[in-house]
Length: 361
Ligand SMILES: Cc1cc2nc3c(=O)[nH]c(=O)nc-3n(C[C@H](O)[C@H](O)[C@H](O)COP(=O)(O)O)c2cc1C
Image (cartoon, rainbow, N blue to C red; front, side):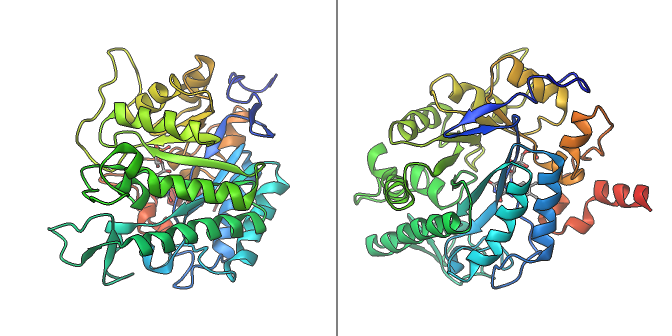
């Protein structure tokens, strides 16, 4: 029991596969564009970024979306795992994370249709988008190449010392594009039925299991509304049945069919999606989005609505968010910038960070 704060559930241990996670707090994947460069190698800024959050005390640290292929990046300075050259730098991250006894996961990513022109003149995707003339439907052979890149990325993550990987299957990126019938109009074995739309993810998952072994943690960032919540739940149940170890439930990158939380449910529809998914599976579920405060995070755990809670922007705004909460100290709160978090452009634009730096002067 923790004597210094009132958040006993939040700071209770919980099993994840073969590991006992020291608390329920996850630092979710949060890209830090500008920390690396066109080669996608881990640099000093990335190391410091993860060192601080690990030292603070998050139980699970999921390293940001890391590109499995150079032409599938979401930005020119995204971290990469497309070559053996990336392993040494990534090992630096696992070293600092494990030093603080956190579970260390790498998120594997391909942007597909939303790959920016600055990365690739062509956007490879399940089905070409008529409104995007530079998009092009992947051939079955090319899908095989990307599948291998995900598997090889997972192998490199294991070589770098990660306890596991999380597949980015949310936010409208490639895996999510295949799963969603609104984006996937294919008529071959990768489109049409649920089984066909999940074939790409299934082959990646089975390949990773085969090459990385049964001890390696394999998680999935699920876009719950793909396209509607009942489809997300079906996908979750299916992913559990093929051996996924946890689900990290977020949104599906589309604003149609948004689930409506019942009256009195004091969290947003993304948290509601995670809570709903959890009712249908037996593997741990990480719930996320605008949880914001330790009181709300503890509530979700205490009431068995979530197994783990991700606090993203709060831990960007205050690298020592977990330590402050654990010690009963004030946190440097995120200011919820609109229309979106300034970290997407640069961490230096974050007003909460500026406030923190001024305080330390
Ligand atoms: C700057 C920034 C970067 C993000 N990068 C990623 C990412 O790499 N992968 C991912 O799955 N989600 C990413 N997200 C979404 C977060 O993981 C998280 O779901 C979101 O911030 C909502 O949680 P919060 O309200 O606790 O911040 C990012 C969000 C922000 C604001």
